[in-house]
Length: 298
Image (tube, rainbow, N blue to C red; front, top):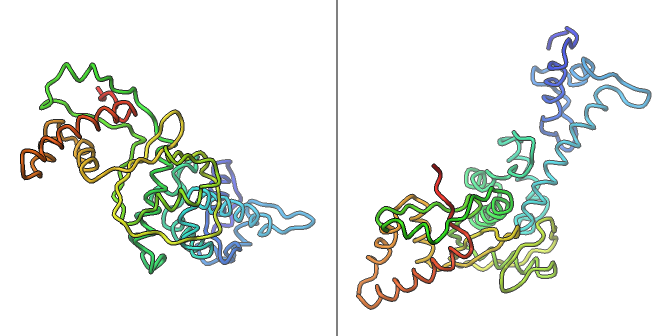
């Protein structure tokens, strides 16, 4: 580490950021700096001691507060995962995650957007509950996305009449997520949130900052869900496999005709195909009313 004094505001900001954003060492600032020198020597280059604290101790306050804020943010955003793993396991997972994927934005809204992928990469941190933890993290990420992602102008039914199905490519709202889950984590979260003003009919999420200390069993059940937003409230809507596959095909930029024909072709007899066609029509009516489709980008 250079012995030259700090000469510019940019240099001071860089030094401060490098120190504050370093992971803690057992809830304390690391004693050794990146080059092997003592962190106290590093701190003395740009922070003066006062009557009560030396340079290292003053810098450590900022380092701790930064990390406590990140850990608290993850805990707030993933209450279900925290409840399932327990606080100690969740904190260990969070520290490891932040070490690999540090905050890179001025906002903490998407701090945990790679947490599900990280659980896949490091299953030992959540074993023997890795599959369940992945489902829960994916679901809670979808909730955050539904709450924060932009909403584009809603597609009007009249505009579809101007094109033939073979040419229609539908775009879904950025806030809409489709999930295929191995566990019924949506039911688990609804039970945990039962005392916090959720409606049974809509599954509306009205409070995302509730912390849970009690865990209960989660049923292993293949589940298809859509997580979306309506009137500034996040909703969970269960789907059956046909509905999920149809929406998934549309999200993969298949035309409306291709998506419908692909689904109908899986039915072996004409009667089942006719029933499915009526079902598709009814589903589209509901999805259009919910505003799931948006106007195409130019």
